[in-house]
Amino acid sequence: MEMELELLIKFVNKQTNTAESEIVEKWLAENRMNAEELKKFIEIPEGVKLFDNIDIRKEWPVLRNKLFVREKYISMRFILRIAASIAIFFALAGLLNHILKISNQPIILSNYSNDILNIALPDSSNIYLNRNSTVKYKKNFNKKREITVEGQVFFKVKRDTLRPFVVNAGESNIKVLGTSFTVETKPQSVEVIVASGRVAFYSTIKHCDTLLLLKGDKGVFRNQGICLAKLKNNDLNFLAWENHTLSFVNTPLPQVIHDLERYYKIKITLKDLLISKLHYTSEFKNPSLNEVLNEMELVLNVKYESIDSTIIISPK
Image 1: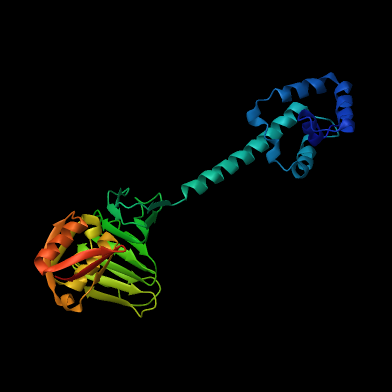
Image 2: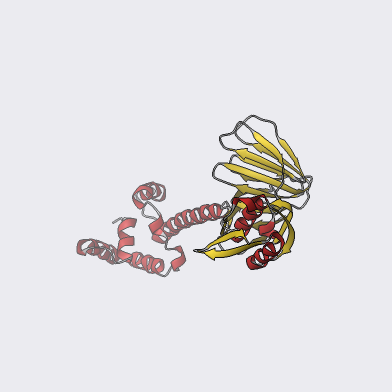
């Protein structure tokens, strides 16, 4: 009497009904060897009992045709070893696939705090993430220095002439060998300001010339624009969020207000248009808002007050 592998497995796992149990018990009573083989199977360590991972109905007929020769039943222990080997193969294949998927997952770093996040990349370059900003790069970064940016990030790139450093920013790319610059992605544009060195700035979807940006240059890409634009950077405080330094050199008061609003995340209003014509010169390191406003009162002969979370500046 031949025994179906599926029925035997159900019996071992106590999943057979009364009729199926009687069939297995009858098979065991026919030959003492059958009972011995079943006992050995039950004693196999849990690590190789992986039959749930095999499509038994599909695989067993093929396996049985190879194992039964001239209708002579081969050792059940041998059959179970083959089945267990198949199961282990499928389990290892699944594990390998899982490992490969994990190894291909990018590294994603985000900053949702109120502080600036300083990160050392695998190639020893440094990046500074502003609030609500994210960078993403692959685990093989040392082989291919490529990173994707969302938000505002300041880069200090370690020079490597053999491995260009590429920043993906929206529908534009920035390529450098070793330099420092900021990248800011906005809903409709990307801005790049160079602090040192040289930067190649180009669009990934439009056929236009690549911009070569030098220290003090600003590159702008607008999603709905014709091409890239190269400007001189007149914003002395474009890095204030990273170096905590505010600089004003004969700066029109509206620009001063803009920089203060951006740095302190507040709303400031000029009560009298006449004072908008004033210019302001000063420099601060790690200043508090009150420190800046108090000096402005003294230098510009103005006064300020806070009303409903808004700073109001007016003439004295």
